[in-house]
Length: 208
Image (cartoon, rainbow, N blue to C red; front, side, top):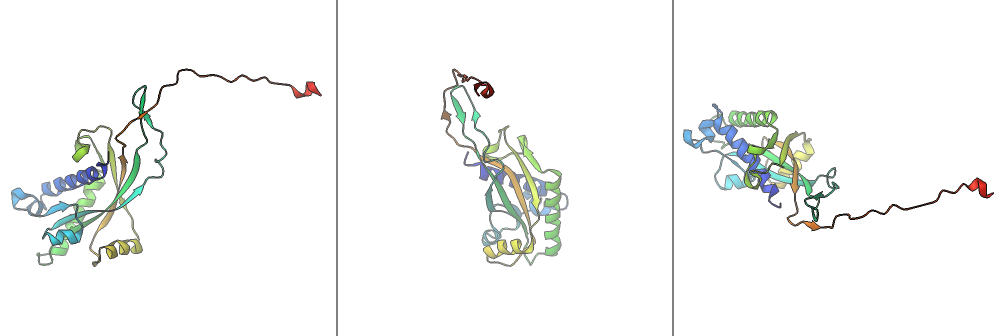
């Protein structure tokens, strides 16, 4: 389904939101029950600031086709139909804590939030079953894996240059495998009969 990308983003966002809201050190910032106003947003840092939002930017900045799975065979769903091979993609997210400069101990709070996010995804890197959100809800075939990426200085600089803003404390995550499944099934009749070719083995030495 074409909504697999946004369902993946919703799944990761909802997980991180729950982790931050339940943490004793951070719930006063993120949990509305305790007066928290910070959020985990899919917007870029600039978009969040434009909305006067603080919290975490979970920005999807890159989508790449998974070359290792793109040639997987189609799946037969019945004797007359089969599902075409899904388009497998890898999603790359820039995770950035955003705290107003006027906030007391803003730098310490950013690092605390980032540490919580890193540990949460380290302890729970796979998402399936009840972890899933959006259109993935109830889909038993979906399993996502989040992996922290190591980015060199040049790649990090390119990402922030694209945003036309100064670098912020951040980390990149790759989430796989996200499968964009075609919504239509192909029709193919089952094999009714197989003809085995017949050949004769000739000893060429006897012909000399």
